[in-house]
Image (cartoon, rainbow, N blue to C red; front, side):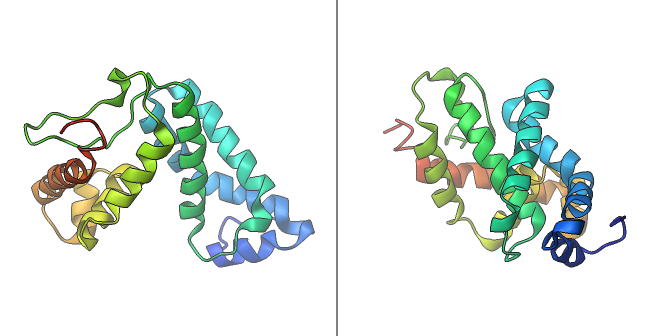
Length: 188
């Protein structure tokens, strides 16, 4: 059975039935694999590691299909799994880098790879809390740039803005993150 032209809703319905579950999941993998691998690779900065982690993401998604309630898009659910898998990997190897780290008032990007004892669990909770304080448009840009890995030009076109405006928002997002995280990061 082919689901190439199926909507996301139709795929979710097909997943509910044992006889169509596997084919529907194969279509989900086909549609989202490159995007998920792109997210992971931006975090770990290594194509081979990204490939391995992406495989783990889809294995986890397969094993937990029964937990997906359809309250969000499939891509959002997959991103959440990818983020958790990647953060666990990063937690085990603190020499890895990940963006968007906050930018200080002087324009320096805080780099956790320079610190051996970064508690990633806490850092990412703090980063997520800081993210919720961004404006609506900044949150959309944050998601498009860092979670979806889309080019500035594409984001600008979709939002009806200029590319330089997106760049300016990215700069301000980093500054906002610094504002909320600099005490925790050790900059008094």
